[in-house]
Length: 160
Ligand SMILES: [Zn+2]
Image (tube, rainbow, N blue to C red; front, side, top):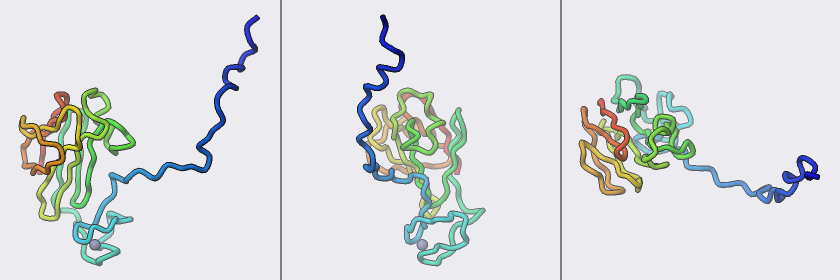
């Protein structure tokens, strides 16, 4: 006689995580004031809540990266994590199909002067700008037309 259905399922341990919440993950989509680095609750606001300086509006520089799977945009003050893990990167869907891209691969951002930067986050297979591998943790500028490659898998063209 087989055991009654559902018997195995009752052997699961009780949930021991009740009331023990994980700390919130750092919000990689947060917009920061480019002047005082306060996190902005409303990125579209005309001025910073904290230092009251006017915030960059339309017409200010935007970093665009054209990947085969989609176009990514980064505004001044935004740090965008590129990677395959939706818990680490808000644009993970752009990279999920690329097995050699790390869960948290690189970060790109624009500084207030309009210069774009990329930093490798200790990825397994490397971040490359125009074919040159970045040492991990080093901040490298990105210029219009640069080729940003993650692992051997996917290359995006920088537009500034
Ligand atoms: Zn501010």
